[in-house]
Amino acid sequence: DGGITQSPKYLFRKEGQNVTLSCEQNLNHDAMYWYRQDPGQGLRLIYYSQIVNDFQKGDIAEGYSVSREKKESFPLTVTSAQKNPTAFYLCASSIDRVNTGELFFGEGSRLTVL
Amino acid sequence: DAKTTQPPSMDCAEGRAANLPCNHSTISGNEYVYWYRQIHSQGPQYIIHGLKNNETNEMASLIITEDRKSSTLILPHATLRDTAVYYCIVRVAGTASKLTFGTGTRLQVTL
Image (cartoon, rainbow over all chains, first blue to last red; front, side):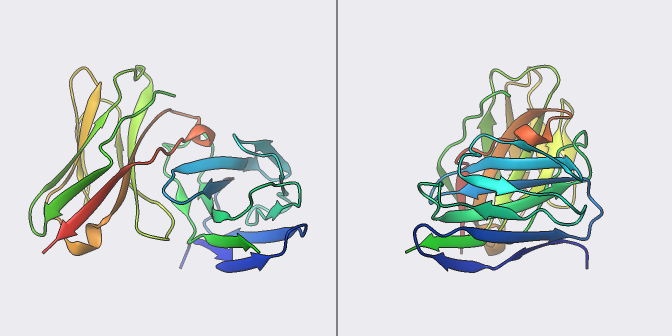
């Protein structure tokens, strides 16, 4: 089945450690996105990529990094510079940036910093 | 993108229609209205979108007022599985990167 796969579903990290969250899609979508969600809050955009080897900062990019070396993959690294990394992270994709706005989301990765 | 206002929570009896309102009084002429929902601890799911005409699909109906300052998402026969947070979003076509999710409406469907 086509879709977006995020891994791991749950992740624990010690303070000061970097961690990378995986996001893979087999929908042949050009655009991919990373959002962060805190308890009881909406989603905030971290980074997005419209095409391979290109990405832009979203609203809360500080302390995060991404790469887009392949169309189907858009990993997110949460660095030690991110002050409050404990959150629910959601990856999404869309056909392209000028599409009608239908985003397809993965099931999310829940990161807890101990 | 225009800001939206939604009630924080609503209840609906199973089998009845759920009508979820959204106010977007500052919407621009080229901004679409989108609805997504998020079931607890899952990724959001696209439901429906529209510009100015009413829209219907297999999941829901979207009613947009003539002045486009508000809209209503209708789930015609709510079930327990429709319990979720519903997000109303407005955005300009071609700017998917700026899709902004507020806190939405938490719909509780009860027996």
